[in-house]
Image (cartoon, rainbow, N blue to C red; front, side, top):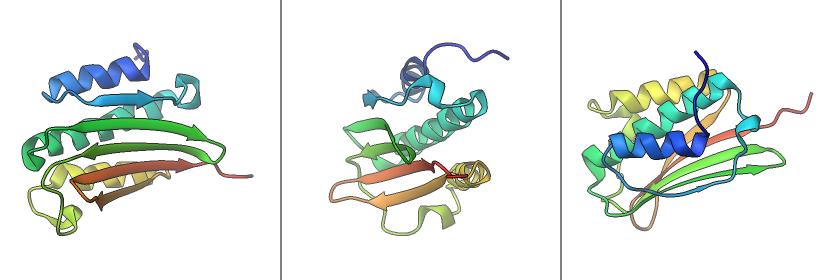
Length: 130
């Protein structure tokens, strides 16, 4: 199936579906991601947004994608209630565990970090020097 639309427009569409209006700052060129990476990354962002919608009670959400010499990083930040335990081990966060497993299968790092207000989902691909 051919991948439709720019990554940014796909993220905007996903955000509408999850009833969240994030501030989006996206500078990862579509060419930097394979078709499979786009699908998986979008699934991760979607899961993060669903999780925020269901659990965080946030009023502000931002999605930031940046490219650097070592690869790329995506942050999904919210100003909700934050996390106080490892969310990957909570019974009702099944989607988060699947998301982390999928990310790791692609060689990405995925972290969920508490912030001063709210939390951050960080997905990172580091370029491998062969």
